[in-house]
Length: 193
Image 1 (cartoon, rainbow, N blue to C red):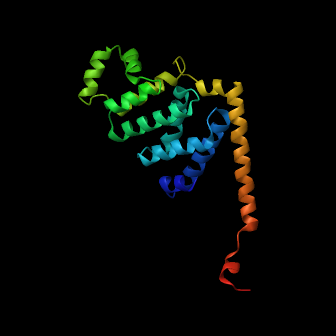
Image 2: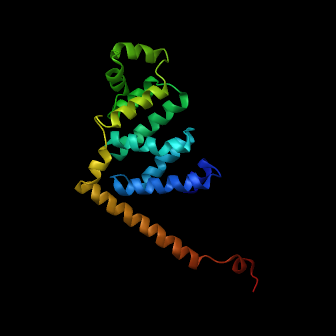
Image 3: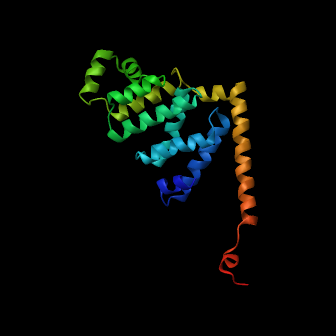
């Protein structure tokens, strides 16, 4: 939470909203809120605007289909690509290894062949926005990954993950309450009475 505060800056409203959204998403999907916060930190550290983090996490989460490792790989590749502004070969391979080839989706929506798209990529002509649009297309109504995390969240494993996430959030709240009563006051530390 503190790192998110540093990365988002003094925009307390945005930070608190992002943390709240991450927790709600974690509670409704197979993902743990703590893992989602790590994904958010990665995106923010690569310069992705705070208001784009949650929509990006949702679409990457749908494509990763509840798999934490795939989510982490997609987040890293997507963040790297966004920071350079274009799709590079290494980022494409990471995305493919995590289960999604954005060039396939771009080919489907534009009608361009894979050979043409690979040639354009080698020339730096596949922009980060084009790839983001491919992710959006694949996770929107009619796309292969549409609402995938919500569908998985209602499965047995998704419900178990939600239970664990809710228990962890409850423990953090309890910890915060205990901290209030066990932390010394500034007066106690200074030795004044």
